[in-house]
Image (cartoon, rainbow, N blue to C red; front, side, top):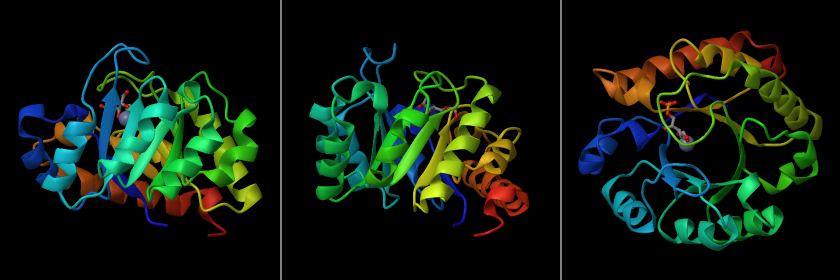
Length: 228
Ligand code: DX5
Ligand code: ZN
């Protein structure tokens, strides 16, 4: 599968979201960070803004829910128009039931792990998911430094995907930029969220293309991709 680049609108101008979505046309998905000021110490946007954004752009929405009580709220983001909904493992009481509900409502189901949450306890759950998100910063804010200590977790997750023969996408989020994306791709990621690296660039659409090229070249060199 080709590398996918998902710009995070957390680094966009919230007063001009429709325009900011158009500025990255050509991106695979638009990454929408939902924060509730409880699961993370920051507050962003909710269902009404996702509904409005879904009407304003043809780029599918990748909603990353950094909220407590994900079991209760995540299905509403499918109804709001998200094509992919990511809940945090740490915030879901019944992740299998929730992933099935998200899929049944017609979206891709995805689960995220904070940096201190290991992948191993979730091995048997992976077939229930369409994507796994490995956070490469502590969730809550854009513009933080990439955590290199997450690379072994990315590698181990890629091994589990291969071991079980899964069609699971592996997303990384946090500090992904021209200087870190190749390490992520080499370790096994295939979906890349980039906030400040895209919206902080003079030409966001060009930044998306450049990141994709870097990721694809690194993937082509990577051992994990050799048998694909
Ligand atoms: C952080 C968010 C990220 C954020 C990434 O909690 O989940 O999606 O926008 O921003 P950068 O790419 O600037 O680290
Ligand atoms: Zn995010």
